[in-house]
Image (cartoon, rainbow, N blue to C red):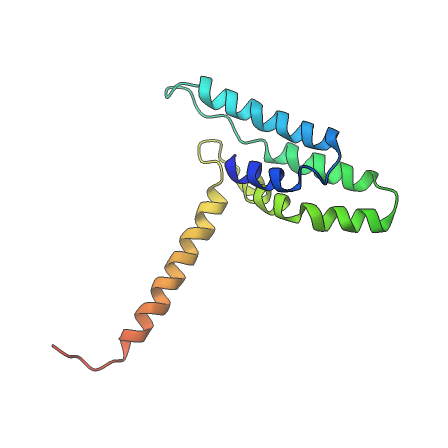
Length: 124
């Protein structure tokens, strides 16, 4: 939620107010649901699809190709923050795609570091 809010706050003054209000209300609903839910209830799924749909429908409603291209460039960081949550189909693990990507990056860094020591002479 916080990474989407951060990207939204960066572009808040450059997007139409109705678009900002729509996305902000979705995020506030999610925050309210997460505060009111108890540990025994299953967490609700992050509505990334709703946010992505709102952005795509607004981009399609723009008449000029220049406006559409500028809107696409402007909202790219917000879309990139939302997309990993659209790929996760398990309600119990929202954002699992994002976690997997970061874990694989960590493993790749570890393997790259270990390769430096693989063929070195033994000092023991």
